[in-house]
Amino acid sequence: MRKFLALVFFLMPVTLYATDGKTLYNEHCRACHGEAGISKIKSLPSIKDTNMSATQIKAIIRNGLRTGSTTEMPANRTLSQKETNAIIEHVEKLRAVNFNNDVYPIFKQYCLSCHSTKGSGYKASGFSVENYEGILNGTKYGPVVIPGSSIESTLLMLVEHRVDPSIHMPFKGKKLPYKKIDILRKWIDQGAKNN
Image 1 (cartoon, one colour):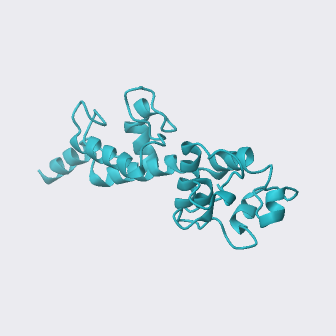
Image 2 (tube, one colour):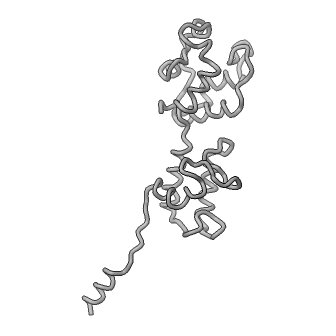
């Protein structure tokens, strides 16, 4: 009898679930939310939506993944807390601001004409936006980016026009669009990485 039970147990199908966020995301989320987190269905929130905070995205994922009903995410089964956390971790990676793709184009468009090593902004402040190192080095007066803290970063104060009008950036120009400022804020808060 023991041999029979051991054989039955051995032959029983065992459902093993992935535990890494990327695999779980691909299995349960990608069909609707896309590989890069850009929703394929207009009524669904996009993971890359810059108008939604990371906290809001986490709440949507936690609430949707917890119920497992056919109207919630994912429709095929309820995920464990560990699986939910792994998906959230993967989504946070998808939402990470990229210096080369997201941040540097802003500096290039709005700042480089004055803050290249030959520009008037560089001559006045010593601040170059020609490359990542120049941005992190800051000005001759000190750093303008404090990785992990947009609140303490002078760069944000300048582009948000929270300083004396004589030093607003872009200098004698219009304030950057909110979405551009938000990208800079997120990049700084995410550690101002050279990615």
